[in-house]
Image (cartoon, rainbow, N blue to C red; front, top):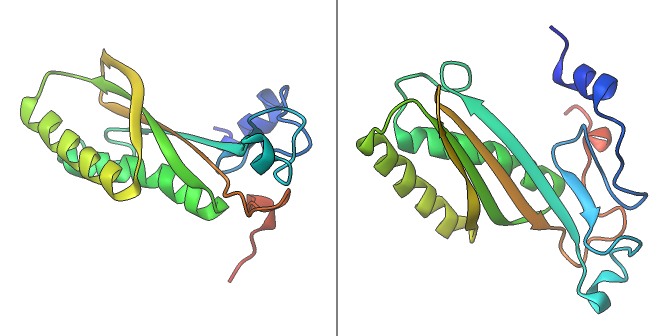
Length: 164
């Protein structure tokens, strides 16, 4: 099977986010809240560059099938928050999509308690999402912004990373 990045470059590079953004293929996307403005203009326009990251984790692939709800919530949100930290961005909002095999009240209570604590710790707001029935899968989409002090190139892209 092709790697994640091979699939992206072959099938999903038809859309761009503009010259001041960063799109498909990095830890998170960065785009202008008002197209055509740079971050230097943003404070006056109240239009920071928006950052978005989305990750799906599957039971039996990314976490053990018998993992507690709290462990799943923590691991699932951590992958998105680490993308934000790597890019120097501030997470603010969260969308949650859950695919649940059954209505396990204990698991859901653990998941909810951990997620609530993490949202409080990171000042995140859960603003929506989806639930459906099927094999256990958790998708978080985290939205936020680059700090106003970050210039046009004030984010850290994968292409700028180096070993060591």
